[in-house]
Length: 348
Image 1 (cartoon, rainbow, N blue to C red):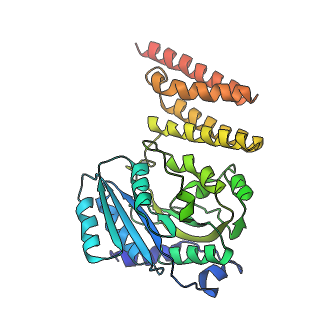
Image 2 (image 1 turned 60 degrees about the vertical axis):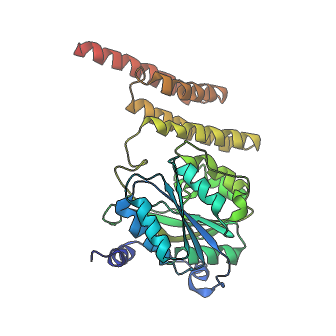
Image 3 (image 1 turned 45 degrees about the vertical axis):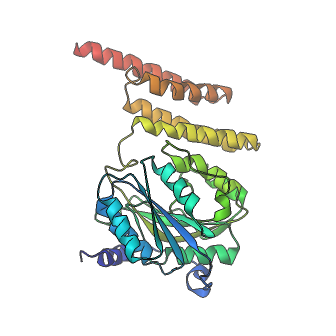
């Protein structure tokens, strides 16, 4: 039971697969000829423990017409050697070795090298169910869509499903407007993340991920939807997202998380420019929650140079929108500073 296949079988049995009459078309009712190349881009950095499981799950896909692009982002462990090993034995695997530049830089390098008509992204510590790409490809071909999205499951480092993850993805076809609506819902992460999708290559003709930022998917999701005529969603849970305590998003709130404020500010401006004022305001409120989370975690005075620009930006935007959250933010900030000063005085 220690093999990848055995663990995968156990996880598949525990993951609830949602099935509807319509979605059966994507699963077994229609099989399209696998004539179009799908480029799968995998940024790799310091994931030696998980990399083989990830790569094996991609190589075992039932959709076999794949170009698998491994982007070694200057990984300091044995990942570069593992990448070369897989490339030597599997003709579908290509390797790019580059200086470390972050996940956006690595994904962009993969996009520049990709030759497929379709694009997929995989995080190198995660893994896929064997029919993920076949189901997503069948869905886009059946609906003549530009983008397909599936559900994903949070699993722990032993591949045990985590109970707090309940997918909101349904079997449906979305217009651009529908997709924008999804971005302002409470549980919108499934529509933002890059890895549970396949994309028409044309989506990235003029679009790349922001270098040096985290929340890179938050920066790009609205721009991706904007160039799609039709989006199809498949309720099946096909992507396994490992929750690691030492991963970027697995750590407690840290200073770089404030990148999320800039990402949501970009979305605010994007919706404003389109006259979608309600969407803009709801995006702004999501940014407000990021700032509040940061203020709860950090001493403002110690990190003032980092926090102040985000705080000021959010505060004055909320004022402009006549949103009472501006008052809450102001009170919370100053109350926190007062309490913090009082506590320090009491300790001295």
